[in-house]
Amino acid sequence: MYKKILVPLDGSELAKKVLPHATALAKDSGAELTLVTVVQFTVGGAGAKLEAMPEAAAEREAALKSEALIYLQQIQRDLKGQGVTAHCVALEGDVASQIIAFAEQKSFDLIAMATHGRSGIDRFVMGSIAEKVVRGTVIPVLLIRSLVARQVPWAEAQIA
Image (cartoon, rainbow, N blue to C red; front, top):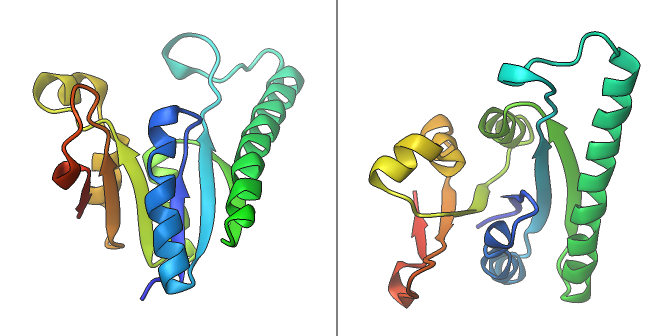
């Protein structure tokens, strides 16, 4: 059913909780995984890009993308050891917008990602990349919810 699964990761342990689920889906369906991270490079107040030293900003942005790719390549090696084909991509810009645009441009069958599972005022204040992705795409999204306080097996995954 799934041939191309996009797995957004942000370097956190929470985000990696999706990997066992995505790996199982890939093995069962013969799908390839694409690990993606989105680098947001801003300097100064209110997210303004550094204008006075564009060379320094460009160098720092390149370094951040390089670090992100190294992180993804480590996970890629682990997946290869498990018999799963995975690719790595580092994007830049607004996280949710970039995930949606990339997934739709490359015709992914599924986006699999972890979520904090916040609700109420926490979600309002913190925002939710997962919610923005779910609401912004027609591609199916598998959300793996991280329950910090307690683990409820039947509530770990939900498909939107």
